[in-house]
Figure (cartoon, rainbow, N blue to C red):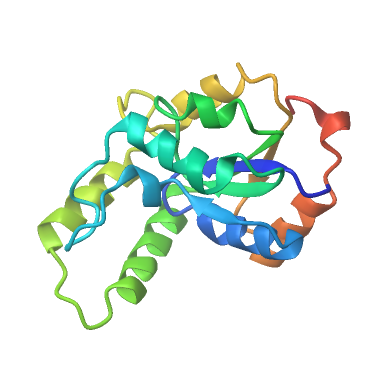
Amino acid sequence: MQACRLYILGASGSGTTTLGRAIADAWSVPHADSDDYFWMPTNPPYTQQRPAARRVELMLEIFAKRPAWVLSGGINGWGERILQRCDAVVFLSLDAPQRLQRIKRREAVRRVGEEVDTEAFGEFLAWASHYDDPDFQGRSRVRHDAWLNTLELPVLRLDSSRSVQELRDAVLSWEPDSQRGE
């Protein structure tokens, strides 16, 4: 796969940001994570949402007008104008126990030396643990699968229990035109 406008999504903890950075580095293009646009910069972080229209404006100003980039994270329900600029989509899946372990490790690294709001983190873990529940009304596998099936873009589905290098290589060797919608 040549450098393009690539969108990577999956459940929290599935490795979308890590893979996004790896692909962007391989292509020497910008990488953006939707959380950087979704959330206002606050201390503690992730407590105040940015208005949806402003998220999209910022994305258009900063990277989305470029000919190639990698975007990771969730934009469902607010980022349609960004999705219209995408050339291909990668969907990462991973079983819940592995995802939750990754989230715990990620937060431990992010918050070294900081006081952690254990109640807020517990709520986040509970939310993330419901991703595979078909009745969950938040971001879920069922919703992602249904949404992916509506796209007219090529979709590559990967099990993110593989190493970052293996996942990166799978994307870099992908020929999207031959796998539209798969």
